[in-house]
Length: 118
Image: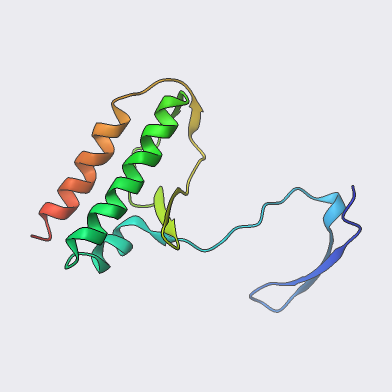
């Protein structure tokens, strides 16, 4: 109730909409690179590959330590990078809970992906 702004949005069909930002809920997103797209680019650079994997696993560990769990088992669309920072993308099935084996499950899926490319 404090932005006092309206924006004009144009969809893919070129229809225009005026949206009062004080009347709608929204988030601003930034485009991310999916985890396996990034890892594909790093297959020939072990040092950068290890940095990227460490970032993802550190992110998962921080989430687990905060007792935040995720029912969604997909790694492909759930993790990615904005610049050099690992992020979790799809938070639709996150809940309060403790699932320490999430770290092992995610690492298994990444290892399987890597094994298929070696």
